[in-house]
Length: 137
Image (cartoon, rainbow, N blue to C red; front, side, top):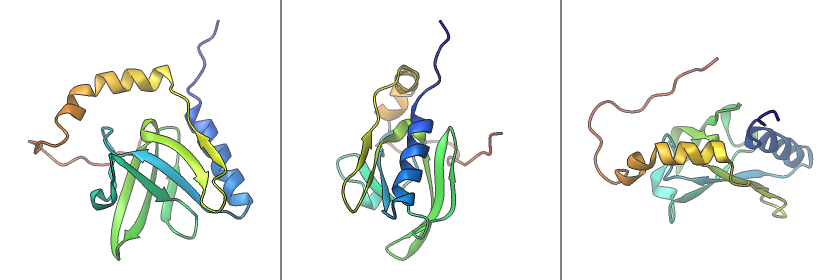
């Protein structure tokens, strides 16, 4: 039997397109405690943040098989946002709540275990260089 690819990139793109084509506002639910997530921490509540990813709300928007990235303003301050797909828990339309919560996927659970020690030290100051974005082709 062939191993299936992870579903999340496909489901995320499909729901995003469906919400935007329905003239609604797509929001993603992000687990901000996951390794690699770069979001405005002052808006994180209980480890989660909800981000508006509507075309009129963000610039330089990119959604690929690995991450959602964009630039946006939070309280008037510009910020580059980087959200690995494994940190996205769901997507929904602000206007009516239509959307989905993504199922657990074995490939992402393996990443969670590999990054477990990173999550355990998330509240501690990090030594070394600041995380940076890398273009992967």
